[in-house]
Structures are given as structure tokens and as C-alpha cells.
Length: 277
Image (tube, rainbow, N blue to C red; front, top):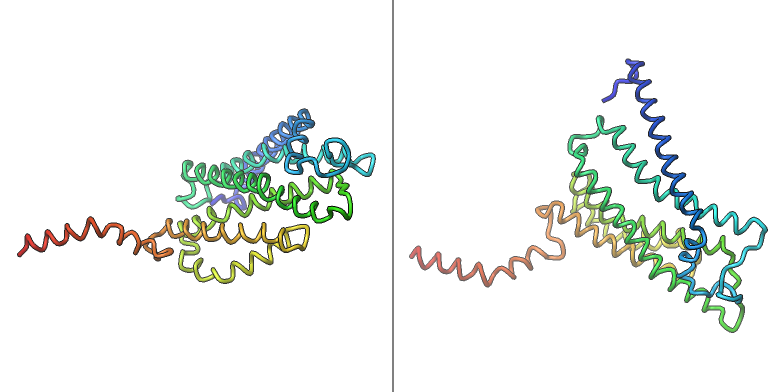
């Protein structure tokens, strides 16, 4: 471990390394934010696709802004999130290189860390895509269609983007659950059997979390959130079992595998017995 308390020179070196990594992260954020702002019209048009032109009765069904600074605020908000896309990977790599010396040996392996980071990124993008292409269009179908014949939707760009980014972010986080459960089991922090014991509580937790995350309290929107949470837990439970198969028998897969091998193993066993006699 770094002994910075007793060695001022090491402490200064640590602060220097931290400072330059901070500059690198800020530069990455600036590149992402600047690029997003430069292509703001294309980016915002792409973000409006799930709404399918149903946010207002005006031409093309585009959202509205109620204040003079509304469009500007929304654009800068999108640009800042574009900066996060480029800054977060740089931040993770910077933190790893900064604290690699104090990590356990099994976590220092570059390939292991790189593989986990890539898998986490892939699952986050998968969850974000699921929210963008599946959840948000269905949610808007229900919420906007609920007022047919009663009222006309007039959604501001800030409200729509807030809903979009909220759902995309949380579904990206939810889809990290299988990877997290695999790591817990692989690193012997929380094994398959312990994770299996809390299965009954997961459904209740999924409902509570969906109530907190979803912006509305209708059952349809909460179900769109709660069901994927439980599904991801089951996928994570399977991943935890794959990490240490000897820890249990997930969904009787071991027994099923033995039955599938029986047509091959039974004649072989019978042949050995006959040969022995």
C-alpha cells in the first residue's frame, strides 16, 4: 500500500498523478461535449425518435419550450451528457492506473479488468437500447394515448429529455446486475446460495425500485421497470452459478445435463460391467 503519510515526496507524486488524470478526464469530457454540441441538430432529432412525433399537435409533433432559455438549456444538457460518454471510460482507466498498486493481485491483471469494463459497457448499452427502443415507446403509447379525446399533449423538450435520460440511465444500471452478481460469486464475496436465498425478496424490491424510478405511478409504467429488474436478477443468478457451478444446482441444470448424457454414459457403464464379468 502507498505509504504517503510517512513519505511527503510520494504524497506529492500521488497528487501530481491525480492532477494530470483530472486534466485528462476534463479534456475527454470537453471533446465529447463539443462534438455533441456541434452535431446538436442530428443528435436531438435522433433522441426524438421514440416519441414518434406525438409530443405536440404542431408540425412534425416536435416538443415545445416554455421559456426563452428552454431550448438552450436542453441543448447544453444533451451536450454535457455527450461529454460523459467520452469522459467515463477515461475516468475508469485513470482510477485503475492510479490505484493499481493497492488492488488485490487478482484484480491487477489488465486483461481481467479490461474484459470486465468492456462487459459492463456492453450490458449498459444493451439496457440503454432496451429502454430507447422498447420501454420508452410503449410508455409513451400508454401515457399519451390515455388522453385521447380528452386533451392534446403539449410536452416540453426539458420534460421529454428528462424522462428519456432517466429511463435510459436506470435501465443501463439494471442491466449491470448479472455482471455484478457474477463478480460477487467469482470473488467469493457473496456466493450463489446466498444470492438464491433472497430470490423471494427481489420481486418486492423490484416493485419498490420501479415506484421510485418511474416518473408516474401507473401500473403499466411500473411493470415495464419491475419485470426487467426481476429478469436481470434471474440472469444474474445463472451467471453466479456459472462462476462457481459446484456451489449449487441452478434450475436443476446439473440434473438435466446428467439426463442428457445418460444415453451415452449408460451403454458405456453397462459395457464396462459386462467386460468386468
